Length: 120
Image (cartoon, rainbow, N blue to C red; front, side):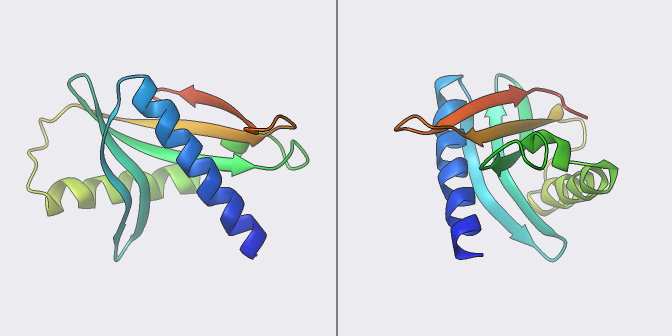
């Protein structure tokens, strides 16, 4: 479990760097509330973006983004609603859900990163 958590943290760090290079402004990391956790809340242009980061060490269990099933999507939508209400944001704010897929590879820096904008 410790190894899995460390890989997740490394993947999230790599994802943050990746997002910043693409013009995302990070507002929150690991926003926790009674409903759960949002990995990253950011701004990209005029849009509030809720980002789910999925990291895997191999393709053995499929691509990282394949772990975001309907139940997880529904949960992320509930979390986003909570966040917006908690922060006092109006619901006319443009928002979307992005997924950052992080796969460990054999290079020294070690990650293949892809983004799926407006994933669901």
